[in-house]
Structure formats: C-alpha cells, structure tokens
Image (cartoon, rainbow, N blue to C red):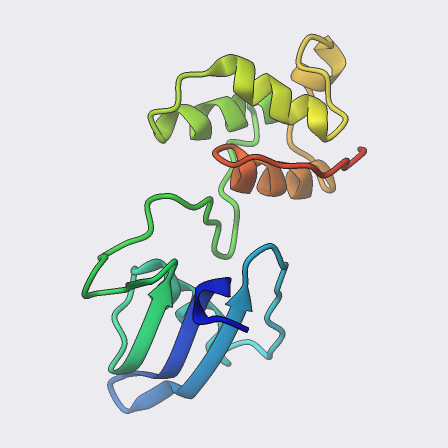
Length: 161
C-alpha cells in the first residue's frame, strides 16, 4: 500500500504526564475510507492518542501525520474533520437537526440545502417535524455523532433510524 493511502500515520509516539507514561512507542496506520475503533481499559491512553492526532496535545516522541501533514510541524490542529472525543456534548434541549445545524455553521458552512441532503441520505427528512424536532436521545445521539462527522464530506451510506 502506498503511503498516500493512509490518512493517519502514528509513528513511535510517546506521551507522558509528569512521571506517568500514558503512550509508549505507539504506531498506527489508518487507510482512507475505513472505520477504526480503539478498545482499551480506562486510563490506557485512547483519549490521549485521539487528542494527539487532533493536535490538542503534543507528543513527547514520535510523529503523527494526517493527510500528509505532520501534526505540530506542518499543521497545528485539525480543522477539516468532525471530531468528538469522549462525550459528544450536544445540547440536550435542542433537536438533533438544530444541534447539527449549529455545528455545521460553526465551521463557516452556509449551505443549508447540503445539510438537508446529508440528513436525507441517512433516512431523516428535515421537512418532517417529527425528524426535525426530535430531541437528542440514546441511539439518535449516535446518529448525530455520525452526521456531525460527515457534514463537510460527500457520503454514500444509507443509515436508517
């Protein structure tokens, strides 16, 4: 596989907080178009790794490359990705549509027609008051997380509620 096929390259990354070494010589390659998950016990470094990939934390050793850019050298922080680490932090009193609309416009995206087309692609109808006004709930929050990660990209999934 060519190096350009990897959207994320983590190479020999280590990270410590005082005397606590959270990441030790971590390496990871993520291919474009694939979905990955990290599994581990609490405190094993999953969140630290994600924060490092996003540029929220710097590594003590090693390099992280995202889309060909070395984090901390070529790029300080990811700005073209839907990122949710730990709790999604949606506004619980707002509908799913309004949460997504808010997150979408935070990225200086103005095309509401595109946002509606993304919702339709996953089986939600923004014109339907039941779909548009549904407040966040278990299951629907997962869909919101998924949609938030897509509102700037072309998708071809059919995710039914």
